[in-house]
Image (cartoon, rainbow, N blue to C red; front, top):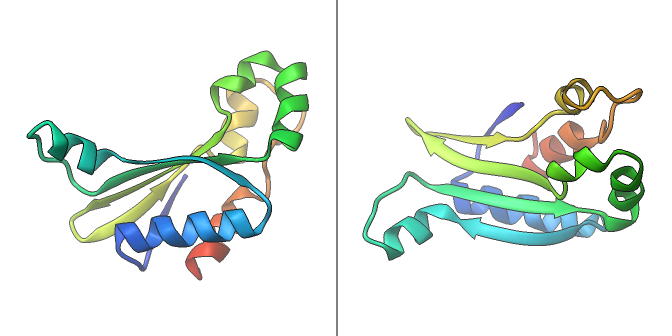
Length: 119
């Protein structure tokens, strides 16, 4: 799924991180991929990967559906192209189909990300 943020990339990442933390989620990592590229002399558009989740909720899912661990923690990619800031993530329906699950996991995720961005 892809959302368009009305904020610059760093502010978008800050808003997501703050909002998700406030909802009790753990922020496992924030990787500024453009900064890492710059550190080795390369240029990359603003690109930030945020890894987040709730081990209390995710662990039982990984126990029952081991392949789902490929998707956990959850990820949001914040990137900019042509003046638009995108927030890209694997949507609940995509995960259900990809892993042939009898339920739709993380159904609240799109709404949480939209709320964090004020959409």
